[in-house]
Image 1 (cartoon, one colour):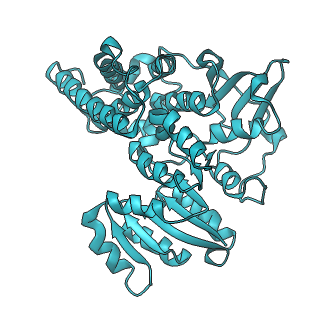
Image 2 (cartoon, one colour):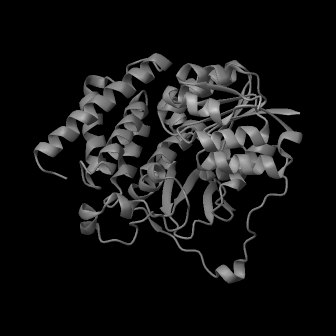
Length: 396
């Protein structure tokens, strides 16, 4: 049986991965090595019992007692904390889902790749912060990285049988999020609750707010460049309100290949789980006549300045992506805490990049795990300083 580990099992991606495993035979068909999660230890324990995992790990040491109690008598080992996450990554597995949100997913993903595993990567921040390091580690250890973001899975599928040198442009689509039809001047008063309501997808709060600000799409633009290569000027984003076309690849002969499917993450997860084969998946089949039409509009960088910042990050390279991601996470925290306004998030990120990029500080440093983590720390500190300055000036 294939050995499976899921990092971030209780999040949206993790839950969908567990759903597919159960539909494809569960513990009778897969040897589940490890499941990890956060504070929802009741759900983590339930998953571990159902899939008969070897170990369940919570990222929070103070949750260990609750996890142990929930697993009592199951035979499933309980563990907690960053070291336990790293040790889970060292357990031999054939296929690992990396779905821990944020930069926290980088270390276990790196550990897993060193064992030559297949890493299904839903943690976009890993490529944004340390793309060359992650891909280099995979190559050095004979490991494989399969994209799980719907956009990058779509690009990956559109390139099957194609030469990358024939690619002229890559276009990823964006729903536009909660505020795509709001007047720009109204965004200053947007609340976290309003930003947390996505028109198409059911996702966690942080990624839903990132969708409204387009910071998720900014990360995906950078991720596209890191994973597939190419000229940043040829990587584009377009708003597609229906969220049915996930990405398009244009070739030098003028042809464009589009990946079309329902807005259901189980497609991209299932493709990675079953690759290189395709298996039946419990996703809706599209009725094109009923859909009638597909709409597109330009992704305005005045409305969504995160897209402009992403282009600058792609051009700069080095550790700029690490600073961008950390600043974004800190700015999002500040918005959710009502310390800054919705538009101010992009301003905080831009200010952090300006502060840390002086004299080429982010482009001259070697891309190592230690330096990535150091830049992550410095960017969060800088963002906190800038947010405090914004509060003093009353710029919520």
